[in-house]
Length: 493
Image 1 (cartoon, one colour):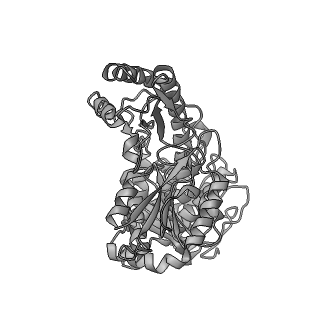
Image 2 (spheres, rainbow, N blue to C red):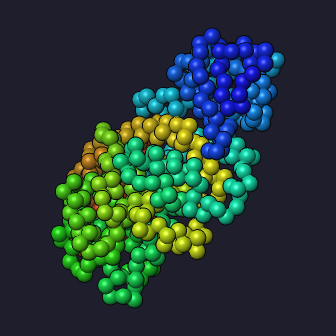
Image 3 (tube, one colour):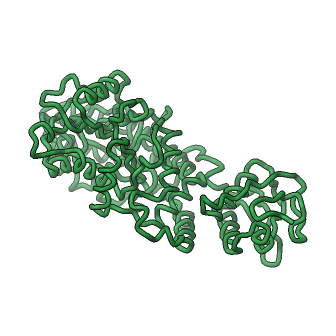
């Protein structure tokens, strides 16, 4: 008789003959919970590595539940997930069998997007080139709905209490595993705090760190140009903002002209809005300055998954050895804004204060969304979706840069477009009023942002384009129209 926690699928199981190729089933870890997910991943991995070849029969859900000592519903739900993702085939009255994965569209886990062929899609007519907005046309709605539904139906009693205010442990672990592999982040799971948005994370850190009534505790250094929302949150928190200039190597703390900071806000991997990557020398100088002044660095890593032609740049947090960096990430750009999940990886010395502030603010993500996202990540679906969208966005960025250089190169200097969902451009005429130009373009259906919006001091005029929702097949038409509007509205441009 089989034990309740392990079995060998080569032996008969309640009169069901199993595949001829032997492998030992990993024991179910009951303490870890999510037995359904463990079953799903166990079968999925064996199907992918060929241990369970196409056509092999699986035991009935009843027999497998008896053998493992689990509820039949646990096995049924695991099988349903495997069927929905294309790993299993089942017909009424027939045994459940392993699918021939190569015979149809594979799950995202198996195959990243090849090429950039896509149907022509028109964005909303009044929002052309809007920055900061991902394309949701290819969002895996059905798959995500299955994950949400499965978790909403199977939440455990302790999942529904007040015990997870800092975030569901499974999601914190999944996030840390992801950023450790892709971004070089070094932390422990308890340092990962789940919040509804990057804005919420920035706001909480301001509350924890800033001391507006203290002349030495209310100063924040910030990139110039920089993220307007971070500027607004700092002002609302009573901070005195000192703009620090950025160039092609990122923020230059040697040029900071002001009192020492309590907080430094940066976007080192893909500076917002210019798109430059902070050099290693500048990163080390930034950490040295933070250490010397006793400041905390907020590293906002909002879309660094999308680097075109190179691997994502390692995070600043990964080279910090003194607990100076609070690392922020979000699923808004890489997955969907409506999911409303972001995270802060907080230095150990700030954990207690951040947790208290988080609970006081009630900035909590619904538990079933956290649980579903943890499953989605652990099953490899997020990695597959990122691969697919990265290929599409790379093509759109390249097409946008080429079209702008062709039609607007006499008026605009265009950034390289090496990553991200936005593209910075600057007017060659430094006297252009970019706010007025942006208003004129808005009346014609364009949604670019003026570079003036990102500056606290002297402005280098330009426009920030969003590239996520303009397909290569249509970008030439849109940019040609844009060039015509620029010539008509400002003959001097």
